[in-house]
Length: 226
Image (cartoon, rainbow, N blue to C red; front, side, top):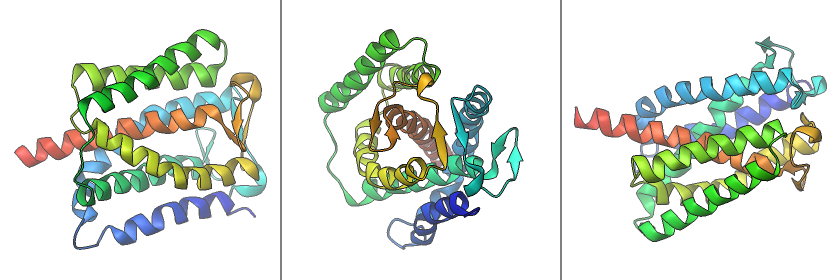
């Protein structure tokens, strides 16, 4: 079905958009903080996406896309970098409203340290796998900046939202990789799968969402001060 990937994008964003108008969270009021960061992050990740496509790190099954491409990328893939961050930051905003418990600084630092340590180990073990190299280099850079440079106070709460977002992640990415709509070249990754999902996808998603969350919090705090 040519519209399969397009429909996945549609249903990914449908409920977050509709629920954005809930009177309690009122996420629609925060769209102005989210959009600039989504644009900046999208440019960064779409650059790598184009490169990965050209280098055949992954490819797209023509049976499940409508055929409109921009810089070698299907329209649906470009939309993916908008719909998924929107949905996940919506989860983050809802969690911030409904859950008042704040993870301790020790818990946050330990989790950041775990992710950073894993990144370093995998960069040493797989220096010639481009998807692995880029994914964990990006994640390591972002985490060092957020944990040690700006000492982001929201980072622990973000981790909570990230783990919750893994449920829709497994549904969406599971469908994309099981059909498959997106096909991965195992010579450019660790060739380890969780079901049909490449192991790196978990951390590529983490880096993507971390960058979006960082810009969201930056613009939210900046514009609220002014």
